Length: 104
Figure 1 (tube, rainbow, N blue to C red):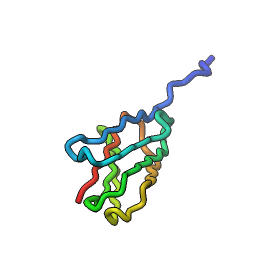
Figure 2: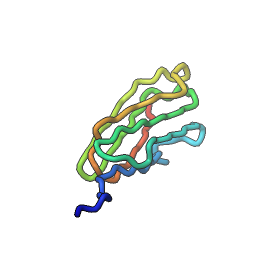
Figure 3: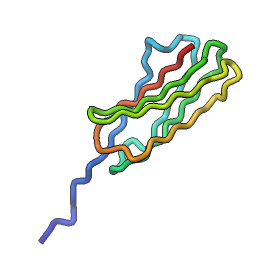
């Protein structure tokens, strides 16, 4: 008889905000949900940024050892929206690093 419990491939998420890319005057927050999901996974990344005239671009990267996906958003400096949402769908199993880079 087969066991009712099966190990399902999962997606585990870690997120990073590279300190070298962020100025102390920038107020940035990132949230990723869900933290763990079955494949094919769908995650939502919410990035909140204090408006700043120097903020001209936002890049969000979801990467594992076998998969890479990124999104790029042009920002309108201090008139940019405070919150941006990104959805990544059909992520295969693995441990993922989610990075956010804000640039000129």
